[in-house]
Length: 88
Image (cartoon, rainbow, N blue to C red; front, side):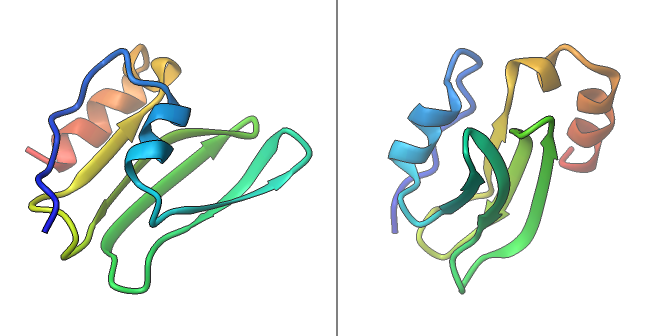
């Protein structure tokens, strides 16, 4: 089991993907259309806004906790506050 890493606010989507090779990104050109979670993933959340991952979270036996990604736009929005409350 891989240890869960705390959210680092300056992490990019590309960096998150390098740390989570179990995710598969579906794109049309430069626009992300979906993310395929691993088969053993549970409690998945995915919000794509304007072709970019806005927020994503999932739980998998590969990690010791829920894995989160929030884009810079998400961290600066009211929606981020609502989503963050769901995980408190």
